[in-house]
Length: 368
Length: 135
Ligand SMILES: [Zn+2]
Ligand SMILES: [Zn+2]
Image 1 (tube, rainbow over the protein chains, first blue to last red):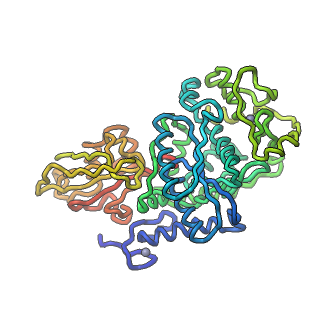
Image 2: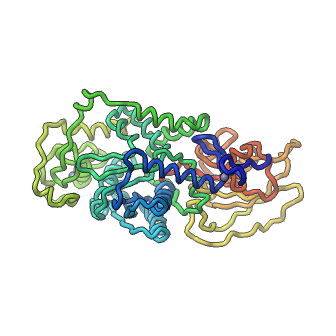
Image 3: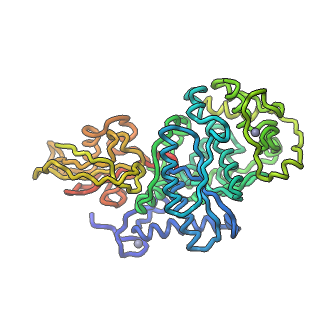
């Protein structure tokens, strides 16, 4: 076959077929359209960022966050967003996995000249994932990891004093999450998962600048830019349910590439009825650690209490309806001090709750 | 047929290396009826190929017992029979690669090159990158 000319500049040889549009583009036009589309996601509406904002990039060393760090620091200079960028990494304590990927992040830190903060499960919770797995087994350990990571990112961000966390979630990830939430019947999450920015009353703002970026293009971008990233599967990972959703999505995409964007649009079109919204729980703060929670105890505190009590998988069923004080001799999570003084002053309102509902839902979800 | 595996690759954005060891040169001599093809893996796929991120292979110029010029479809079958070391289903789906694996032929998206029907030329470089691992 003779080389195809780029459909944008008409001169250079096309090297990428864009999954979103079918367009055939050369390397430099590809860089330009990819970066411009991310810029458009950023400036759309009122814009993702405010000038002077301190923004932490959740950096795992994997392809998405590595490309995000590169693109965001490029765009910040090119369009003068005026952002103060940081890299924030979580060390789950997985030997042979996370320690390797953190090396990649440290390399990024040097390449982009961004300050890096690493927060470990061990420091924060007193438990590494290696230790958790040796106690609870290989099944369901992803639940512990997910709950602990989310909170660790917020705590790391609070320590950096940043107002905003951006993550590398791409269009494929979001479509996959839409599918998973439908299959789990998790309507509350379905409404939230397609939002480019989520911000609760007392949570740190989170955004996904790659919401419309296809995974294929992110990988192509990393390849052509020769960006170094880490790509070995988590040794404890098999979240089999998510794995199936991913394979299903890739199969759909290979037949019709627009499937990914179509599923995101479907997710966006679901609107919660008011009655359903009213049935959802009000947020308060965890009585033990001060982190945002819909129960007396946040999920992390409940899980930690289970671990400290020596429970195996049944630590997942630890109640979130509990007293303020941890049982004697147990480790607890340090106080979450995003607004250090505000916490001292206000006592969270007491709300009648079905306290175990959240964790039951999580257990149901993984039991599937 | 011979398989020449290289040492660890140079850092190349494929996500497997922190070393800068130079690529080794293929030691065996290519026959006239063979093609020399360079293969590279990214996104963790090398784990399925005896942990080796780069190969230089010699394969027949025409598909055995046919008169058809060797194409990517035959290359994938050849890889399956000769160098794929484990978890076949992570790489192969029917007679092609599993969805979610990107293929580049001489740095171009294989979707622009005819995919399985692309006829391989001597010293072509084929890169396989998995997109399935987390980011
Ligand atoms: Zn062009
Ligand atoms: Zn708590």
